[in-house]
Amino acid sequence: MNRQKKIIAVVGATGAQGGGLVRSILADPEGEFTVRAITRDTSSDKARQLAAAGAQVVAADLADPAAVARAFAGAHGAYCVTFFWNHMSPDQERAEAQALADAARTAGVQHVIWSTLEDSRRWVKLDDPRMPTLLGKYKVPHFDVKGEADACFRASGVPTTFLLTSFYWDNLIHFGMGPKAGPDGRLYFALPMGDRPLPGIAAEDIGRCAHGIFKRGQEFFDRTVGIAGEHLTGAQMAAGLTRVLGREVVHQHVPFETYRALGFPGADDLGNMFQFNHDFADDFCRARSVDFARSVNPRLQRFDDWLAAHAREIPIG
Ligand SMILES: NC(=O)c1ccc[n+]([C@@H]2O[C@H](COP(=O)([O-])OP(=O)(O)OC[C@H]3O[C@@H](n4cnc5c(N)ncnc54)[C@H](OP(=O)(O)O)[C@@H]3O)[C@@H](O)[C@H]2O)c1
Image (cartoon, rainbow, N blue to C red; front, side, top):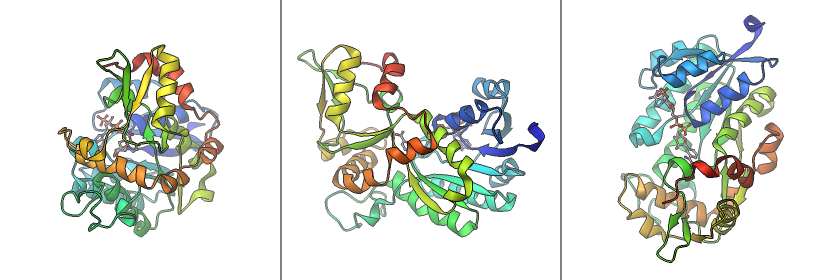
């Protein structure tokens, strides 16, 4: 009976992380949860599809804390994620995280999953010259502000799981990171990671892991957990791409300074991010356990699984 089910309110329900969670809960009709999908526009095609698939769909913009609190009312759990790349403002992201934490407390939510990342300044102090300080007080703004915002959830008193996510392999499709043709006819996959491994994941699996964490509940209250589908070097990813595309794909390391200077919005933030992921790869990988991810999501995909399903969607430049 739907009435007896616990509601999981999902921020970003029409997007990558939240969408995976919504689909995972809807695919488990005998499970203990029902889903409330939060969107800014309940009339969009994606929102209508979620409603048709059985989700309750409600409107809230993270810029409107009162609307977020209404959207969380009566929910057992809340999946909280912020959208840095829509505005690229750490101040806005911090305010939105605070609004989410406040709304969860006001609504009496019993379990929050906060989609977070490391505050890189724990590893690289602001006066460390190896990478530039950005916006006066960050090294990797879109990481640092999420890590900083962990404190908002701790202070809220709401039982929270701090979920460290990984690089989406879907960036090869949606973020312009697919292989590009070189003058020699070979394809080049640019990933500024040198020979260090990068934890990656199929974006869909983030929500599936979150579903598994909500199911096990109390075990993960006030804990930080990290997930990945695999930890792969650029060369290993290029080999996977070669197998599936039937054309040689060569991994290309891009020097961090070069990446930072590419000139697109956020290039400096991402250049610092790759350098942080590279220089502290042991810590970064250790914090994202493939075994843990599989324990909460037995369908966890490896890179080859993701490629088998999505290679045709990767734009080849
Ligand atoms: N790309 C990566 O490799 C990666 C890896 C780890 C972490 N991340 C982090 O993931 C976060 C983004 O998550 P995502 O990829 O799931 O996002 P996404 O796919 O871009 O989805 C965003 C969804 O959230 C909704 N949304 C956007 N702004 C909103 C607002 N102000 N209020 C309420 N809803 C809003 C939008 O839905 P409507 O239009 O329906 O409202 C949209 O469908 C970023 O902060 C990024 O740093 C990314």
